[in-house]
Image (cartoon, rainbow, N blue to C red; front, side, top):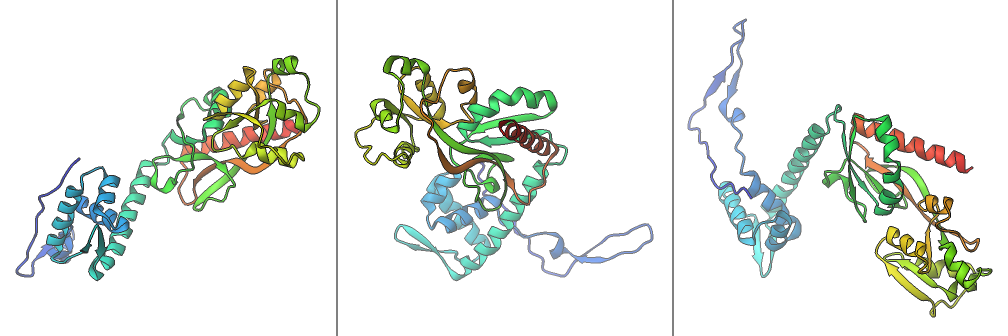
Length: 335
């Protein structure tokens, strides 16, 4: 942590000017006050904005990874610099004074402008590195197995991949692009449909060799039904759509990720629900089979997303064009 405590106040008793001469001897008097900006320390401004937004020095400290006393010190520094109080201390909370409310609006705008300018500078058009946040299932089941295709076509572009369970706010992240799972209704982003998600039951062929074939939906209840945590609603919904009302007696096994659940199904531990597109390889080579012809559309899909107003770098454009082309070819071959 860098704690900036020393700053300089400039007082000008008389009107002074700085004169700039050109070769033509043209000059323009500029008041010295217009040249020397009277700015408070940036750390103090960040502490003020965070404390005002949370209404708490403690929460501001958590966000900025400093101690509450450091936040209090920065606020005191800022108030002394301005010569005016910015907060009322009310029990365990802090509330902005009227002056603090007016100052907050201006400071938030200024910090947003600095953030945007920094991001634009970092995302120079000739940048060939792409930071990409990806839904874990799509990352392990589709993107990684297809990465050699991208590398062969764009050997000079580096992809930096990060698995993220929940959609991130691209405005406040160092990610350039993301592959989200959802309904495609995120604000402030351009979202390109990659793959709709249709789930089907899948199991190892050895499981059916031991237990016999599944001829009707109710036969599924004779087996262990494998869930993925945070998606444990899918089996009841699928069974209900197949006409099975009571699912309370079903045997379940839950895993934290799609890859683990599919792996358990391949080991013969039960029947898993999964996206038929993400399990394409296992279905193709017979490691998994669909034991009964039922399915359910989730009304969700995987989307490529990036900020609407953010200029795309060469690397971002290359990745967008490549993955959309791959998905188009996959859709055409399936049809």
